[in-house]
Image (cartoon, rainbow, N blue to C red; front, side, top):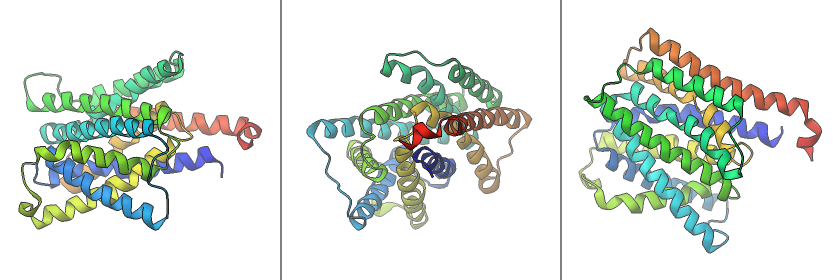
Length: 295
């Protein structure tokens, strides 16, 4: 199996797990900052142990890379805080969909890092995603908590897109676990001073959920996602990640008993169609030019 196909598998597994991450904003009785800090701590310890067991290098190659890791960690920390805050304000379904402005941001911004222009097909696909998100949103009013949650989701999307682009361009030489170890460490250090509930006061049920969120839904999918960017563009990863709202909504239906309306189903279908198109496009190019990929 070729490297790009491996990356697609990693990406799809990561997106499935990402879809379940939103639930913890509602299941854990802590603030968005507290959830983020404790999630980073658990994920960081899991990643460190994994790297040690695999006897994989932890140190970075040069001083410049430590600076890049700092920038990426700040972006990840701000992305997670605004992400969970958006979920808590707007609910899982609306919050997770607000985040999905990031594929649009990505496809429009990434080409400028390469002194080029966005491709027409990516612009069209991004437009389909935007329309799908519009159909799913129940209200555009700026006076309620749902709308405020959407705003936080869009801010989260901005940090997420910039993190993915910067990672692809400046940090993709490192493994996924190594990459996320530094990013979770930076995010933890940046936010730990703002903790509202100290760890010894956190309820046992919340502690268990934090461990699950940190290991299963953070360390694993973010490592897989980061690894996939070695052979896929940030634009491709962003568009395929449009499956995440579908998974998130399904998890919310089963676990939180949310009931999406018909517009949610139509909008979700458009988003998933755009993601599958991008996957099909990559696979098709792979079949057409096998000799190039082998070398």
